[in-house]
Length: 397
Image 1 (cartoon, rainbow, N blue to C red):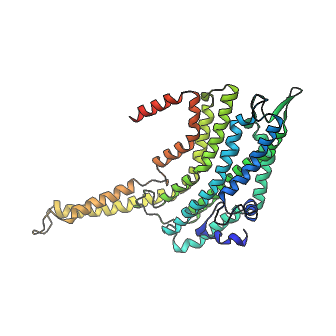
Image 2 (cartoon, rainbow, N blue to C red; image 1 turned 120 degrees about the vertical axis):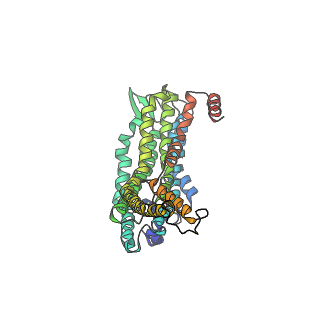
Image 3 (cartoon, helix red, strand yellow; image 1 turned 180 degrees about the vertical axis):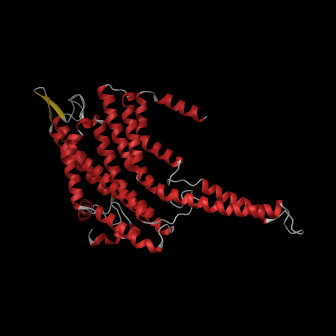
């Protein structure tokens, strides 16, 4: 990192995005500030590089509106990647930067990291920031995006019909001028941004793993978040939500092209849709399972401790009010003992309801629904919009 943003390397100001050669390049080009401002400028510049040359080249070749089975402006997958996914992956940096730094700060603000362990926490955070800044890692990502990603992505980009990016020459499919730009520039940008997010997720995984294993966390089983005080970690999954939505937008674009131009039907892709939804949800939820061991240990300890306290209290309550050892002038009506017994029962129930993973079913359901949302328009290929509205109203009313 340069001195311009050195202040963001403090563990209490943790950032997954403010580092690496590409970030420094954007910083020097005036496309980003240390505060992550200038988002609109970044989106416009990168989208112009990735998409505008394709429009110009296809207009010159006559394949923008026609002249081939799949003209450029009819290629849903290409526009989904370059005009929706790329801006979303860039915008996600601002969201993740602002929310993840707050999430990391909660470890200290909630006292989950004891004062004597804060130096270890800082070392773990510093290690994560050094990995985030790795130049060799980004060079490898760019190389894979430009070379390896080209071959791996062929089956998801190419179609079985003639299109604006590939023409039939002597019975063989050859890339057009627009096709070369698309595969070697536009798709390289798209793949690099995507792979860069996978690398940042790896940094996040590694950070949470080390915190969960190397630091004795100070967890409170009675915390009202029902997660030992670590419920704040569920917010990290929603901070990463734009990345998941970008994936499903790209997926929806591919399926839309297959349905529109090749005569496929939506049910043909049910296995792919199921696989990708499971994969994407696990992608952001999995690191929260790193805390199952400390949360389970805290729950067991609390059940044991409050069980002992509860046994002592109910024994004393029985001796006093059941066995008749209360003072003769002390009335049962209005005594605080009943309320104390109820409070103790509520506390014990709270410990029993404590989750051993820092997220609940409602959060998981919300995550799935938001991730799957870009796939909903594909239902229009099977059921008319009017019928979908009628069915939705019928389900609600």
